[in-house]
Picture 1 (tube, one colour):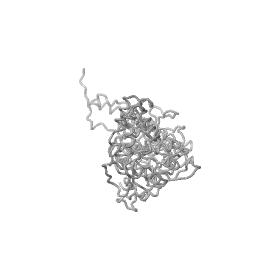
Picture 2 (tube, one colour):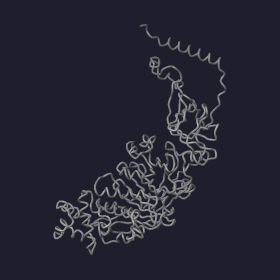
Picture 3 (cartoon, one colour):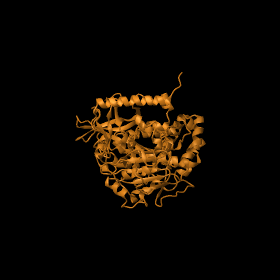
Picture 4 (cartoon, one colour):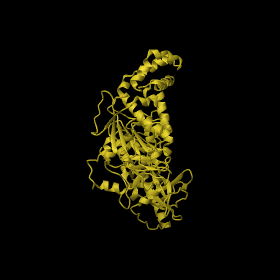
Length: 586
């Protein structure tokens, strides 16, 4: 085989290329090239096909060399249709290089060339678009993509806030969540102001405020979960809603916060690091966002547990869990140890105790269950197996029950008017409690709210009170209570909250579940959540919470405050940038 002469082969290729170019120049007189405006990125091209359909689309854009370093995946663009009064609103889905000529960049010639001699001039850059909607010149609502853009149509970035608001179907007002962003940066258009994003808070679009179709705030530790939650909950305070089942009366919600890390009492105070003339504060107020502590609206309620002390807010009310609530919620003393047969036996004993007892305390119930004189009745009349009775007695005798029930402070059933009142913000910190005591307290509060919103509880004063007002129940570390666990206690709690969530719209109960482990929240509960606020999380977690597919791979890279909002009844899925500061003490 003759020896390969690289220099000779290159000279031959240059001669062929020069000949082709000279022939093209003789045959074609190209029109002068128009310079692209700053917002223009290229023109519609056809490398293979150009089409739109009811299931998928193929629209590609040629990116000229002078624009290549300016274009990034996820940017929003529009394509004027010219022959129709619409523009296609789209997202840059993919960027790629294509070969400009027939030389294969994996050929022997290219393999032998010095890498520094290979220029990107040999390739063209193509952007693949994901059409989202069509924006009309007069229409306030977007339309589905149904017209095809013409080849060579100039494609440009969005330059007007209304294009983004209409294209993504963003509400004009509501509960402020953050600013529309791309790749971690807020979008600014002609006005140079960021574009606010709201959660619908009225009946104009969905028939019900989306707050009552439930919200998930999820993200790994350190990604701004509590910061985001405080800012969101602050927007809820002071809003008003019509009670569908109370003759349309308009009322402010009671915001109940389960606070395992003693953080949310800061909602009552101003952020000491902010000044009223701060530019960000001015912008926030201009778009209807709320800022600042709520002071006397907020009350902190501290559960008493023997041997435990609370350190946090300097203003709080002590309370105790009265054992009488076990009549409504027998699972409070079941824990995760009892199987279904044992739990059924426990329920029968609870029912018998409350029928006959004069003093409805834990101490008396313990005495009732342990009394050997009752054993025969338990085994025969109630049909409880001897082994089952032993298991129940072991469970009921747990020492922490006597430390958490009936602790001498205000019974929760007596201070309901203060804790569950219209317009109130009631924070229940639990970090001072033992693990077992915390579970009893949290499940009690959650159960009172859920039952008042799903059952006729008019024979309970607290049930009547909770039933007549909107309630927003925010549960931090929600995965600990609405778990996938299959114990008898967990099954009852989960089923209770699935029912409550389903009736949230008409009964005005809104759940706000806050967690760093959303994959551990029961699937049945998650299926009732319509709004997901997703901060930085790994891909596996993102997939399990059903994050939009084009965000699942990039959520791990989200820094603090960067989030995805997925709320199909509110808008298209998109990226938001939360406030860099907390609107209250943090």
